Image (cartoon, rainbow, N blue to C red; front, side, top):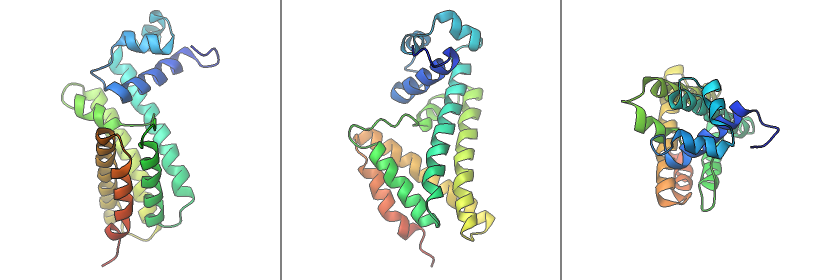
Length: 190
C-alpha cells in the first residue's frame, strides 16, 4: 500500500478498480484486501457492513471521477453537440485498445445487483442521475426546455452506457467513436 494514501481510500480505490475489471460478483473481500495492501481488520473498521457497504463507496468514488471527466470536457464546449461529441471521442480513446478506463463501468454492477442489493441499486441510480444532471444542464444552457433537456440527457446516458458495453465486449473504442460520429444527426433540429 502507498504510505501516502489512507487505508480507507486504498480500499475504495482497490474495490473500484476490481469491480470495474471483474464485476461485483467476481470480486471477494480477500481480493480487495490483497489489492489494497490494507490489513483485513482495517476493512471491517472502515466498512463494518462488509462488501456491500464498500461497493456503495466505490460506486460513489467512480461517480465523482466520471463527473470530473465530464465537467472538464463540457467546460471547453459551448454547445451540446461539441460537448457530447468530444466526450464520446474521449471515451473511445479511453476504451480503445490498451486503455484503462478506471471510472467505468457502473452499468455492469447495476445489472448484476439490481435485484439482490437495494443499497447498491440506489447508489447506481444516484450515480446515473448525477451524470444525467450534468448532461441536462448542458442542454438547458443551449436553450432546450427542461423536459427536452431531461429526455436528451437520459438518451445520451443510454448511448454512453451501451457504447461502453460494446467497447468492452469488442475490446475497441470504435463503437464509442461511431456514436460520436452520429451525434450531429441525433441533435439536428428538424
